[in-house]
Length: 106
Image (cartoon, rainbow, N blue to C red; front, side, top):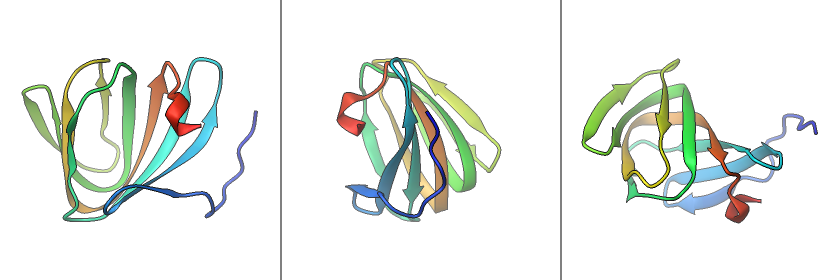
């Protein structure tokens, strides 16, 4: 499966946050998130393992009790079931992969 770049198909996820499923397979799913400064990603948990990479911007990401300020080029991994959330410190773009794939993002 190939997915070519397009500015279409972004879906509002939360106020100030939109997402676009880029590509998926049987076991994984890749998503691009665009996050606007000042709009938080509330703490939440889901059963999917989640790995991410910050393309641009700045985030304060909390995973469990650990908190880190992230810059472009930083990456993370969140185990399934672990509570996490983020403060968006600057307009940001993040790429994240979920396993197993999130059926709600198809």
